[in-house]
Figure (tube, rainbow, N blue to C red):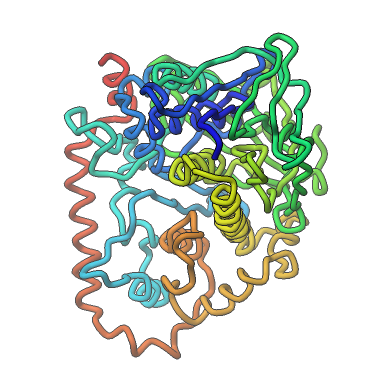
Length: 513
C-alpha cells in the first residue's frame, strides 16, 4: 500500500463505527498512524430501522475504550437479552399464541455434552418445558422483566449474555464523537464524483463541491443503498436474494410509553402477521415498532393497517415512515482499493440485528489486513475478504430463511415461505438431516458462520420441528446426566431472579453514572 490515507464516504452507523474502530486499531491519533478522513453529507439522515445489536457489540465498544455508561446514556440504549417470537409457528387461536424465545445465553453443556437430544426425547414423551427454558435461565429472566446484570458488574460483563437496543441516530452521534476523539477527521459535504486512476482502475479521489478533491490510498464505501463507490463507480454487481427472502418493505413508527416509568422489555419482540412480522423494541422513552413485509403478498395500505392495529389506538395520529429495500449482497465487496461496508455491501431485513454485526466483522477484517505494503498484498487481501464475506452473507440467507420455513400458518406468504422450492439447497440438505438427528457442529464452517449452532437449535425446537430420533436413540443413554443438568438450570434461574434488578432500574442507574 503506497500510503496510509483512508477515506470513508458516508456516516451513519456503518461509517462512524468503521472509522472509530480503524482509528483505534491503526493509531490514527499517533504519529505515523493511519490518516482517516470521513466525508458525511448533512443532507442524508440515518436510516436506523432495526435499532438492535448482537452481543458482539460489547467487545467492539470495549475495544474502542469507552465506558458502558457513556455509550448507554448518549445512545439512549437499553439491554437486549434475545428475541421473543410470537405466532411464527401458527396463528393465534382462542386467545392463545404460539411463541418461543431465542436467548443470547448459550445452552448448558455439562462436560461439553449436547442436551438437545435428551430434551427432544423428553419432549416427544410429553414433557412441556420449552427447549430454551430447559437449557438456559434467560427465559425466566426476561419474563420477570429483569436486567442481564447488576449495577456492580464490570463494564460489558454480567451473568447473562446481552446486547443492546438504542436510538440509531443518537448511536451514530455517539460514534462520531468517539471517532473524532480517536483522531478521525470529519468533513461535511456530499460526494458528487469519483475519479478513477486510468492505469490501475483504482479510485484516485472523490470530489465534493463544498470540499474539492480528496485523495486517498484506501476508500471505504459507507454510502448506503446508493453504493456510490463500489456500485456506481466500480460496477460491483448486486446478488439479489428475494427468491428466498421475500420481504422488501418496512413501515416504522415511534410509540411513546403511557407513563415515564413504564417497564422496558429486555428483549426484541417479533410478532408474525399475514404477510410479514413486526419488531417491537423498548428504549428508555419510547418503543420502536415496525412492520417488515413482502410487497408481493400485500400492499402498503394494508401493511400500515396491520401495523396500526398492532400498536393500538395510541398509533392513530403517529407518523409512519416507509423504507423500500432490495434484499441481497455484493459478492465482491472489495475491489482494488475500495471496500464496501454496511448497506453498500448488502442488506437483509432487520431480523437478528445482522446489519451492525456485519459492519463489525468487516471493520475487524479490514483492521487486521492493514496496513499493506504493496498492491499485490492488497489484491490478495481483497480476495480473502471477498471469499469470507460472501460466504458469511450466503449462510445468513439460510439462517434467516429458517425462521420462516417451519411455519404452519396458512396465509399465502407463509405457505410460499414453507415451500422447499424457496429454500437454498444447503438449508434443504440440513433440514432433511435434522429430522433424524440433532444439530451438529459439523454442519457449519466456523469462520463463515455468523450464528452458532445453538441459534439453529433455538429456532428448530422453538418452532417444534418434526423429529424422529428412533434410528439414533441408542446413542443417548445418559438420561440421568441430562435430568441433573435440567434441574441445575431450573435452580440457577430461581437464584438469578433474586439478584438481578428490574430492567428500567438498571438502565436509569447507568444513565446517572
